[in-house]
Every structure is written in C-alpha cells, then in structure tokens.
Length: 507
Image 1 (cartoon, helix red, strand yellow):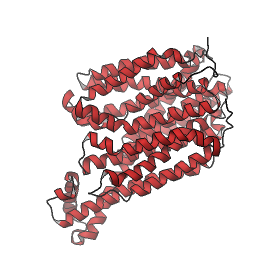
Image 2 (cartoon, one colour):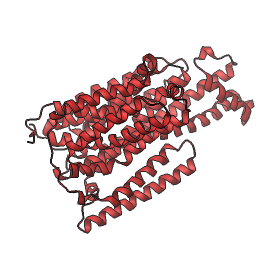
Image 3 (cartoon, helix red, strand yellow):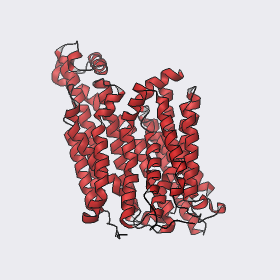
Image 4 (cartoon, one colour):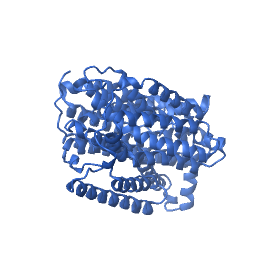
C-alpha cells in the first residue's frame, strides 16, 4: 500500500539524504589519497586520476536513461537496485588488489549505481512530501551533495592519515546497509510506463553526447584543441538527441526525455543555476585544496580542516533557507546567496599569500559556502515547482544531470584557469621584479621550479627576487581563479532574476 504524503515521516528523507551524500562523497574523498593508492596498488598517478574521472563520466552519462527507467521500473525499486549495486561496487573497491579491480568497482559499478540513485532522490522526495515539507526536504537533499563534496577532503584525509583509503569505501558500505535496512520508510510508487516505451535509440545518442561532453571537459588541461573538438562533437550529439526526441514525441511514441519540459522557465534556469553553482564550488574547492597542499604543504587532514568553514557555511545556511524562502520567496533568497558567494570569492582573492593561515581564509570560505548553501538548497525545488506529477521523473533527471555536469566540469575548467593564470603571472612578476630577465625562458623555468617546491616563505633558500616573484605569482593566480569564480556566480545572480517564485502551500 502506498504511503500518502500526509503520512510520510522524515525517515524517508534521512535515507534519501544518505544516498545523495555517499554518491557525491565518492567524487572527492579520494583526491587527497592518490599517492597512497598509487603505492598500495603498485600503479601510477595518471591511472588513478583516470579511474576517478571515469566515475564522474559514467554517472553523468547514464543519468537521463536512469530518469526514464523510474517510469518503467518504479522510482523506489530503481533506487534500491541502485543502492544494492552501489554496495557491490564500494565493497569491490575497498578490497581492490590492483587498479583494474578498483576501476571495475569504483568507476563502472559505482558509476552506474550512482546514476540510478541520483534522479530517484529528487523524484522520491517530490512524490513523498508536498508544500513546505517538500521545500525543506529538497533543500536538505539538494545541499547534501555539496556538503559531501566539500567535506570529502577532510573525510579522505582522516581515512588516509589515520587508517587507509579502503576504510573510506567501507564506511560507504555501512551507509548502504543502513539505507537497505530502512527501505520500508520510503513509500512505494507504481511504474507508469512499460518496457516497450523505452527509447533505446535516444538512450544511446544521449549516452554518446554526454560521454563526449564530459570527457572533452575532463581532458582540457592535457590537450585544449582536441578537447574542444570532443566537446563540440558532444554538443552536436546532444542537439541530434533533442531533435530525435522531439520527432519521436510528434510521432506519438514515448520519448526518453520530453523536450517540452524545457519550455518551463524555472526548469531551464534552475538547472543552469545548479550546474554553475556546483561548477563554482567544485572549482574553488579544487583550487584552494591545491594551494593548501602544494604551496603551504599541508597534509590531507589539515587541508580538510582548513576548508571546513566552507562546509559549515553550506550546511547551516541550507538549513535556514527554506524558512527564509517562505517569507521572502525562493528568488530573493537565491539572489542574496549569489551576492554572498560573489563577496566570498572577492574576499578570498586577496588572501592567498605564502604566510596565509586558517584564520586568513576562514571569512571568505565561510561566506562563499553560505551563499552556495542558499542557492543549492532551493534550486531543485524551484526548478521542478511547475512540473506536473507525471513529468517529475523526467525533470529530476534533467536537474540531476545538470548537477553532475557541474561537479565533473568544475575541477577541469578551474584547472585550465589556474594554468593560464600561473603562466601569465610568472611573466608579469618577472617583468616587475626582474626586468633584466624579461623574456628569459630559462629564468622563468627556475621560478616555476621554485614555485613547485615552496612550502613557506621562510623555507625558500633562494634570493629575495625569486621570493617576491613566487609570492606575486601565487597571489595573482589564485586571485584570478577567485575572480573568475565570482564572475560565474555573477551569471548565476542574473539567472536568479529570471526565476518565478513557486506557490508553496502549507501542509
């Protein structure tokens, strides 16, 4: 018997939030464990980075197909299948004897499982709760992925420093068992379509398009020209997919994705906001973590502690967002969040020096996290607010795909910005502090080597000129990254002005 929305307890929310948490956690907690994994599995860094990239790639590529499977299999059943499969993957990853085993368990099995789970988290919440309860539930689930991504370095640092990276996967397995044990808390939802309605051709085209798009972005730092070509091919494939789906519906067949959904302004705009917000968060977190580990030479644990204010800001302000939205409206709260995120980025842009400390970075990270918390917590709710019940599964797939693309693109795009900012910074700093070496490639290479080795300004054994150049390059490069992130959040602010506040009825 189906549980009505009125009868639904918060138990379902707890389970769904845990699922959203572990899927997002998997994308970030191993970032600080790469060197240890390389040693344990007798492999190399590029192989582990490839495995990490493929997890994100596979999750994003299967998202639209998963959204449609909810209609055919049933959203609860598909969610539990994905959860069980995730348990198999995380167990396989935890006992990996070599990189191939890790790839199968983490990238392939967990990647597919994550794709099955994520769209269902949104549609299960929408089907279980309504009114203000739905806003609160979607806010918590919506920000859970961001919190997991932000807390990933700390979690991974604790596991790697005090135990082993394998315990990270083992912890996820425990959460999987909790979800499966508490599965009866989630209401049942009957399938609304049959297997004959599955659009196999559309699924293949969308898979190819998303794989090419994500792969192109992930390889930007290696070969920009080839990557751009791959991205363009991916966009062409997605355009063909859109045309195919439109024609399929016109012919009276059930499409994999109803393109008419994109006529809804909130879904279009909200998905774009979610993509850009996760891109900004992932990119900023990557850049800050890189600075803390490569420049200040902090270990994995201390890196996680230093970035913790961003996580706290995300979580605390996400909790307050639903109650504020009931007074001011989603649109106003999200606009304020965008402004706060911009302010946090601009504040951080002045803080990255060789003698920076936890307290130096704390205000900027906290404000950035708070602003993103406002945005991310309300974005999903406002995105699907005007979508009819029969199309909620499709809409959740669109929304989840946007989030997944943002998560996967952030690191790659900010990585390119870091490289561009760094190369330009070296040239400018040499011109300022050592004009006699302007255009001297050998001297610039010496500066680059010093930059890679520097831990603290007191550790540099070179002359004062190189000290000044290195310090300037670090400040200008990180400032450039934060200014670009602020610009992205500026676009988000403009997009929030196009949103229409949903009419939320009290339960």
